[in-house]
Length: 144
Image (cartoon, rainbow, N blue to C red; front, side, top):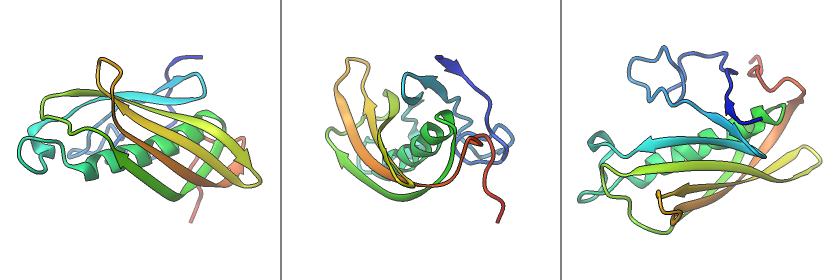
């Protein structure tokens, strides 16, 4: 099933929460084995010169790890995230972010992420591991 899916229990999330006045309000969609969304590198996220700050890509990859887990029916927390930057991203550029499950081993999800230019060129790619807290309740964050 592809398309937007409402799983957010915390409307205040900086990346996807609709109620966060300073947040990005990104609309995440399900695709094949994971999650996807589009993002435009606005001036607000400027790093060196006229390029997107790499930390923004890392943050968005972390979001992909969470949503990919949720779409697959898990409540999971980020254990590790590796990012490899392939190309600089000029401000004003649209990127498509994708997260996809590679495999599940015991209580760990292994997820691959990518940030793609419109022509399919890879701007950045990553790999992350998620610790499974619960299975079958991906819509609900764990209670502290």
